Length: 550
Image 1: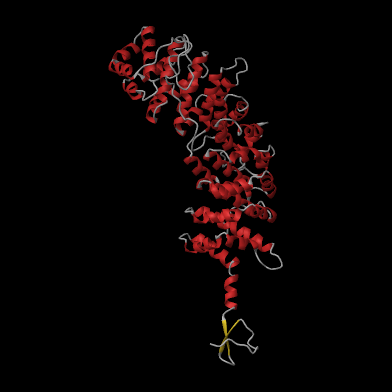
Image 2: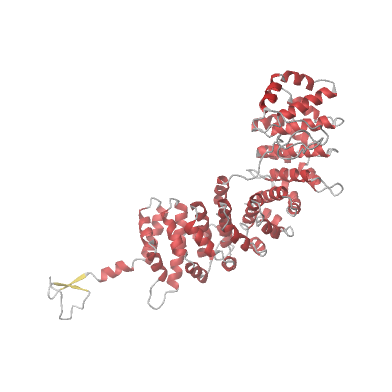
C-alpha cells in the first residue's frame, strides 16, 4: 500500500477519493523540522541597549538599542566597560541610595542601575540581582506620584527580564507580572510602553510565564486597548512594542488557549495593513503562530481568513522587499493552506501562486524551502486546486528544484510533485511527465532519507499506473521506458537491498508489476528440447526441418 493510500485510510471516511485534509496534516512533522532548523527569526526578548545616539536633550526610549532615558529623563553618555566595573565596585553605595528616603537619591541610583543594564555586551544582570535591589525596584513600580522614578525602575526591571530564564524568574517571583499588567493602564504613556516591553520579555521566556501573563488582569484586552485607542493615537514605538508583545502572547509550545488570544486576531488583521516593517513583521509572526492549527475543524485558521482582506494582504506582503516581512507572511500563507479544501480555496482565490512562483527562485534557501512546503499543501488538495498550480506554471520550477537544489529543499519539492500524482488526474500526471519529472524523481533514489525515498517510490508507482492506463496498441508503457532510460530502473533494483522493509516491499512491487516483461521474454527464448531428435531449439518451431545442432 502506498504512503498516500495509508494516509487516506487514516481518515474517518467522510470524503470520497483523495483524503486531502490528512495529506496536508501529515506535513505537520515536516513543518516542525523545517522550523527547528530555521530558528525563529523573531526575537523572543528585547533588551533596551545603549548604542543608539541620544537626541538633543532626550532619547529614543523604544529603539532596540538605547542610550540614556525617555523623554522624561536627561540625556547621559553611555557607559564603558571600565565605568561599569567601577560602579560594580561601589555598588553598595548605589544600593544605599536606592533605599534612601530622599527622592533625588533613589532616582539617581535607579538611573545608574538602568544604565549599567543598558550596555550592549554582557550587561551585569546577575550582579544587580545579587545586590538585592529587585524588591526595591519592584516597589518603585507602585510610585504613581513619582512617574520618572517609576519609569526608570520599569526600564531597569525590563532589562533584567531580558536576560536568562533565571533572571526572568527573579522578576516573576517578586511580583513582576501583576505589577506590569497594572501599569498597562498607567496614565503615563512612557510607563505604559515600558510595561508592554517588560511583559513581552516575560511572555517570551516560556509558555508557563506567557500563560501567567495572559491569565493576569485581563492583560490581552488591556494591550488591545493600547493599540486600538481611538481617542489618543499611540506613537509608532508603542505600536511596534505592543505588536511584538502580542506576538509573544500568541507564540510558544504548548500553544496558548485559543480563548485567551482570539480577541487579538481582528487587531492583527488591521496591523498588517500598516506600512512600518517592524509592525508588519511582528503582526505576521503573530498570525503565523495562530494559524499553526491542529484543532478539529481548523477553527484558528477560520478565525483568521474570515477577516476581510487579510489573505490578499498576506500575498502582497509576500512580495515585500525585506526577508523580515516575507518569511512570516509566507509561513502564515503556508499554514492557512494546511486547512480544509474550502479554507485553502479562500487563499487561492486571492491568487498567491504568482508570488509563490517568484519565491521559488529567490536567493534565500529557507524561503524556497517553505514555498515548496506551501505548494505541497496546495497540491494535497483537489484536482481543481492542483490544476491552478499547473496553470500558474509552478511545475517547471518544482522539477528544476528537484534536480538542482539542496536536498532539504528538494524534499519539499518531491512532496509537492508526489501529491500531484496522488490526488491529480491522469492528464495532470501526464503533464508532470512532460515537464521532466521522471528523471528528477529518480535522481532522489540515491539519498539517505528513507521517508522521502518512499514518497518518490509512491509517486513513480502512480506515474506507472497512469502509463499503463494510457498504453497504446503496441502495449508498451512509455513511462516505464522513460524510467529505464534515466537509470531509474537500476536505482529501483538497487533499492531491493535497502535496509528499510517498506522501501524493499515497494521496489519489489514496482519491479514485479511493471518491469518483469524482459524476464518473461527471456523465458520464452529459453532452449527447448525436441523430443524426437533430442536436440535444443531456440524459439523456433520444432516442426520445421531446420534445427540448430550442438
